[in-house]
Length: 94
Image (spheres, rainbow, N blue to C red):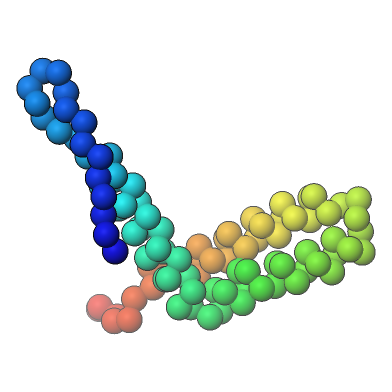
C-alpha cells in the first residue's frame, strides 16, 4: 500500500501539514474494521444475510411498507454486527 501525501506550507514558518496521511489512516482503519466483520461468519450471516433476505421477502410482499421495513432491517443489521464484534478477543484474561 503506497501512501501519497500533499504538503502545504504555511505563511508564518514553513511548517508542513500532511493531508493525504490522515486519509490513508482512515482508509486503513476502515479496511481493518471490514476485515474484522468478515472474519466472523455469524456476524455476516445474521447482520447482512438475514436482513437482506427478509427485506426481499417482506419488501415484495408489502410494497407500501418497503421503506420502513428497509430502515428497520438496516438498524437490526447494524446492531447485530456491532454487538457480535464488540470486544472480541482470542485470549481470555482473568
